[in-house]
Image (cartoon, rainbow, N blue to C red; front, side):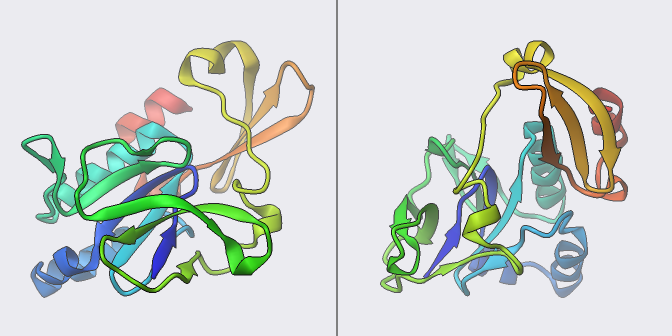
Amino acid sequence: MAVLAEAISVVIKVESLLSLATEDQIKFTQSIPNKTFCEDGELIRVGFMNPADVHSYVEQLKSLGLIFIKDDHAIDLVVVDQLKGPIHNCSWIDFGVIDLNDSGNKIKSCKLKGSTISQVSCPSGWSFENSLSSKSGFISNDEESDKLTFLRRDDDMDVYLNNETGKEVFVGRPNSENRSNKDSETND
């Protein structure tokens, strides 16, 4: 099987999570900061739209005992960019494009190397029509200050004005209680 790889995904081996103590497995479940969680029985995926949120979440996972990088290779989890794939060396996943339900709609996904099941697991309520796979725009951190003006925070979304198009754009963010104070100070 496979998991969706949209925006910036943190992909975790289920086997690694199950090797943690029961209380740390419970802490993991409680630490999921948004509604992008999906799993296929082999991999777990949580998605983000902001690198600072990814960093904060990876630090949480490391505090539970999961190993991120050792000798320049992903061990228990890996960060996957929708456009570029895994951002670190990772020998245990395959990243690629798949046709969603033979519909012609293409999405990026990750699967455990050697897995033969081709179905993809997506977050509850996810639909291609409303997804980043269907319609997305990417603005680098360098361009953000020139192209976007922060307007407001609505629950789990930061709302910006795209200065070039005059349209509002939305960046999904974890709930504030799951974000570190440092992240809140630098991005609000």
